Length: 134
Image (cartoon, rainbow, N blue to C red; front, side, top):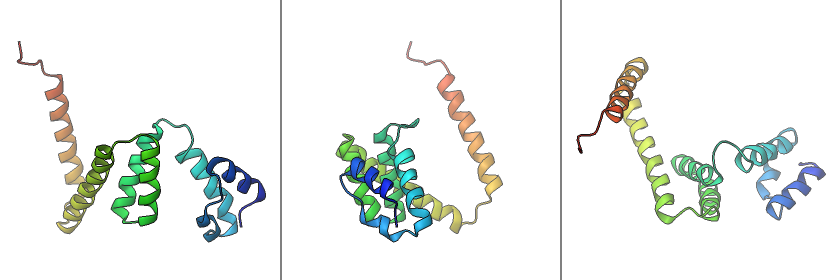
């Protein structure tokens, strides 16, 4: 059960107390709201639209219809375009796809880390190279 103070906060922020809060054990209820309030809805290094799109991508990859609905609505509230919403889901699907490939092929983590470092160095060098447009 969530505390009376937390219920009041939720009603102020969201206009109601969401039903999912009742699914939490009492020791976690207030704490869970603070995570949402301070991290997901609060001011952080990421803009609200970015956080909503990340949340949507993660929700889509996890295949959680509840979180997809919430984060998609949140992204639209933050003026994300249909193209940005689609791209967030597309990126999440790519991450899930390639994660499946990497795990199924049992690619060594150290090997992958070394390859990634080489590729990042290459791209960084390409970006720093003078353009031949002159």
